[in-house]
Amino acid sequence: MLAPPDFIRGLASLIYPPTCTICAASVGSPEYLCADCEAKLSRIVPPFCARCSEPFDGAITTTFSCANCAHRALYFDAAVSAYRSRGIARHVVLNFKYGKQIHLRHLVGQWLIAALDDSRLRERKFDVIVPVPLHPARQRERGFNQAALLAEGVGPYLGVPIRPVLERVRFTTTQTAFDRAERIQNLRHAFRLRQNADVRGLGVLLIDDVLTTGSTLSECARVLKQNGARFVYAATAARA
Image: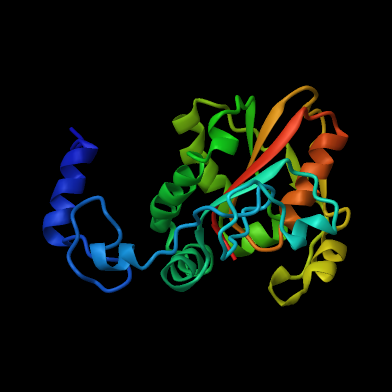
């Protein structure tokens, strides 16, 4: 007879006591950060841009759009992020994506779920969750799609089905070295709707790990709306 999963996890915690993923201090199971490291995370709080969640240092009390959004076409209705992608948050995401520490999806997923409590998302009824796709060559290289793993946690939380209706059809070089204009050009025609996929009349929640300039999310939203999506919002765990 196989041992139940809870028993196996309990036995493993006795042999390998849980520790903070940053400083190795002891933590309670199933925590990933100690209280000190948790306190160093930079939560995105108002005031911020209503469209892309770019934080603003000031005393603005009304809804506003930042300069980044005012002078470009963005196709998502709003993109919401929970934390700034710096320090510990950036370290965790990089280890998750590139360090093959896939267990960190649970921590990053907690941050993503925190983003869903924003009023721009909380008050919406979504019909489908769509993870931002990787090109097949990139996914083979990495071994997984981080957005798809995160969506697996969001779907049950919201009670909304996950549908990978988008595919990445053009291999693009990494976005990290590009400025905003170069990112937009790099992503042009990189995505399309999968054959036989139908998003007409649907409210879509796009999922990804990090928002940098918003170009990837915007291009995905453009394809979805071009194919009849009613609205497209995006949620990410962190924002550059």
